[in-house]
Amino acid sequence: MIIQILQIIAAIATVLTGLISLFKPESITGFTGLRPEGGRGITEIRSILGGLFIVLGVFPLVINSPVAYMMLGVTYLGIGLVRAVSMFVDKSVVQSNVISLVVEIVFGIILVISL
Image (cartoon, rainbow, N blue to C red):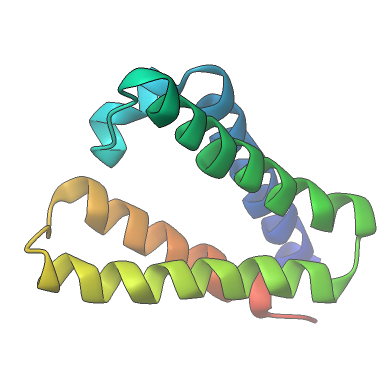
């Protein structure tokens, strides 16, 4: 029961991240380092960090299937793996990257657990 609640919280947090990115793309600059410069940059943030994250979070909530939550978890673990490697390759071991990595690993583990 606790795992299911945590999975729902992770999915909702994913949706909220997407909504912030969709409606306030300029607000993510401080945390992500991405700069929404020009129409193309803003569109990219709205579509990928906005639209994609909204769909990734809403889908498990609507379908309510362990496989849907697991797929979101695998997505977070994949993002975390690439981030971990990239942080060292790109010499970007900074607080916001570390926080993102921890969240991705924690959400990923919570979401792949199916009890």
